Amino acid sequence: QVQLVESGGGLVQTGGSLRLSCAASGRFFSINSMGWYRQAPGKQRELVATITSDNTDYADSVTGRFTISRDNAKNTVYLQMNSLKPEDTAVYYCHVRATIRTGVWSHYWGQGTQVTVSS
Image (cartoon, rainbow, N blue to C red):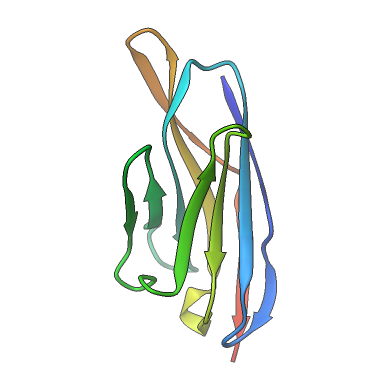
């Protein structure tokens, strides 16, 4: 089982910055990928950014403004969000795909952290 603890959300003005963190703990062999999704009121959850050992991927709407990074020693993923816009307002969820034993992997989600960008 993998537990995810998120932090770093809050209220910021347009153009401001926030940094989200998500630390994974528990029993697993390895973490395959880590990432962030978001869900705004009345909308479906959408991918924001993901990171693996050799690749990062971003939604078009955040490319150039957000940066995802990972500290493997701490099993922690970060999302640096710059030039925030009101349309970035959402609950942000950490996502991890981990190998929990040989040949078996699973998905895990954080509890979500609110990001609100005021105009």
